[in-house]
Image 1 (tube, rainbow, N blue to C red):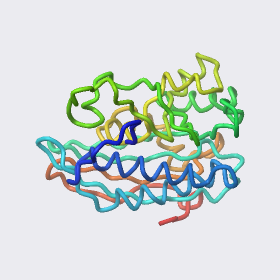
Image 2 (cartoon, helix red, strand yellow):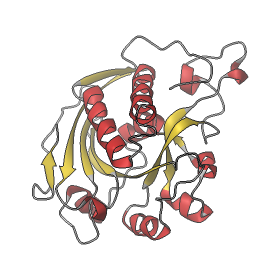
Image 3 (cartoon, rainbow, N blue to C red):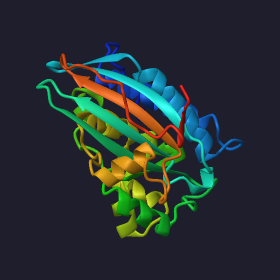
Length: 265
């Protein structure tokens, strides 16, 4: 991800290189749209299109393993104003030992108000409804300024892979950070004070979701993500993602409601 001091990126097809690509995409999706096109729905769509390009038919090298991914994006055909979240990921993971799981990651999105440190579009009643469906839901906060001061590992090898001589001068920063919705509810904040409980979205995706962490596996949450339960709302976009570890077999045949979602790419 972007840092205050420029970090040389890993040229290989590694997680570190992928994180840098996601951060570059986030930078373009946010900074290029502020202030004239500062709209969360437009940013969501641009980000998801870019992620589909990065993750579809991708092979990623990690220590002692290889991860292959595919990704496609569906649009909710209903009223945008009634969407449950900005988007959700439906992630099917095939592990190297043959086990398979499928979980949903719900992300509500919000943009920082122009020239302020607030996110006025966040609503407590909406977060409560989201949390009642998804115990692991996140709020994605978009910022036109670099986001720093996050709940991120204190040692920098998680970001750059090694200790430079002056490691304490490195500071991770991003334009999109993910905050646990239940934590945001508990703190009762709608401002940049939430950053202390956030991690970069690129970290959430590459180091948590693709390993099956922070996803919801309940039948109710999965049925809402897939569009089979509609009375409480559905995500504005549904991201279909397969992750295969090692030599596991890939299955891209997802089950979702075609009357709720249409193919984006």
